[in-house]
Image (spheres, helix red, strand yellow):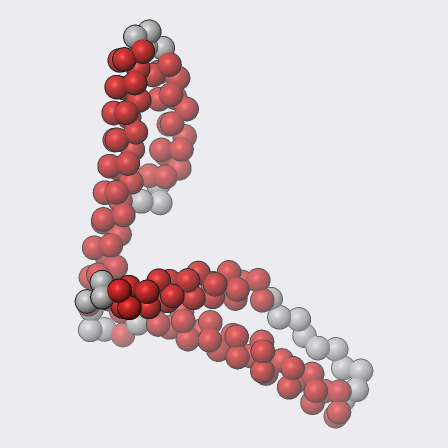
Length: 135
């Protein structure tokens, strides 16, 4: 699937140019609709394949296969804990016992780039459970 989207993006202008060369407006509309339908079908096939892989990973009893998603969540929780609790406490302690010591900088962009989408997925999953869609 990672290759399909850039390939489709690269080929779309070429397909559009070819369709523009069709003189009959009805045939052009049919060709455009057929091309769009094929692109949608290709993207849906990739999504379906990824969902099957995700389901197989989640069903695996091995923690090293099915546990990577919760592990990513726990890494985010730990990073957020360090950033919001540990870092301010360390600053307070350094100001008391070692004034003038520089605090190290923490890259929060990477943490937030991972945490925000995970929180969105968690909210979506909760919404599914409330609506009774979840198994």
